[in-house]
Image (cartoon, rainbow, N blue to C red):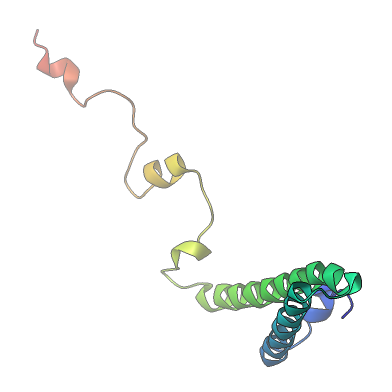
Length: 115
């Protein structure tokens, strides 16, 4: 099997991608069997190509799935956490509704000390 390009996979439907994924997994298992039984060097070098092809197919499937979810949740009030924009930890904690960033002082500490 030749190297698979991601741009060729993006035009295919999900069923076709899943079928291609199954074919690649079967081929990989056959290549691994040939490795154990002492197969030719050409088959051994093909294992890497098939593994990378499986990764490409899975990547395209996951990217299209996430893209469809983004379209579905666009304009909705609530979104799943993995679809929200990525921020730093402090930005997520401090910049909520009605919260100010931590100043390091206890509120009204000056008033509690006395005159």
